[in-house]
Length: 146
Ligand SMILES: Nc1nc2c([nH]c(=O)n2[C@H]2C[C@H](O)[C@@H](COP(=O)(O)OP(=O)(O)OP(=O)(O)O)O2)c(=O)[nH]1
Image 1 (cartoon, protein in one colour):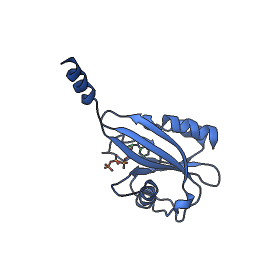
Image 2 (cartoon, protein in one colour):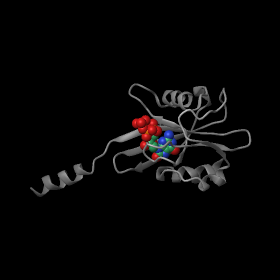
Image 3 (cartoon, rainbow, N blue to C red):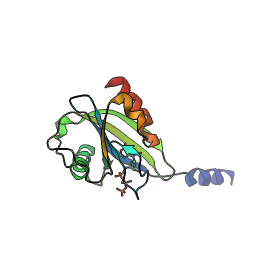
C-alpha cells in the first residue's frame, strides 16, 4: 500500500524530456547572435539562442540546420556545427535537454523571420538580455570559453 502510494507520487511529477538544439552563431568580431521570442509563445520577450525542437526522425544537426533556415534564412553546413555544451533544465511541463553548438561559418544574411528582434552581443554582455532560466549555465560557458 505504502509502496503504491510512493510510486503514484513519483509518477505525478513525471514530465516528458524534450530535445531542443540551439546554436551560438559567432561573427568575425566575436559577437554572438541572440533572438527575442515573439509574443504569444511560451517565454515570450526573452532572448534565446536560435534553434528549436528536434522532430521525429531527425538527427539533431539536421534539425538545427532546418531551424536556422526557417528562423534566420541562412544555410549552415553540418561540418560547421561544433558541439559545445548542453543544458538540462526542469520546466514545469517538460524537462528541457538542449545541446548548444558553436558556428562561425554560414551562407546568407541573417534576417529575423520568426523572432521579434535579433542582437549581436559580446559574451560578457549577454547578461544584459533576459534569457530563459535554462540558458543561465550556457552564458557562463560562453563568457569563459569564447
Ligand atoms: N531555441 C531555443 N529554445 C530555448 C532556449 N532556451 C529555452 O529554454 N528554450 C526553450 C523554449 C521552448 O520551450 C523550447 C524551444 O522550442 P521551440 O522554440 O521550437 O518551440 P516553441 O516554444 O516556439 O513552440 P512550438 O510552437 O514550436 O511548439 O526550448 C534557447 O536558448 N533557444
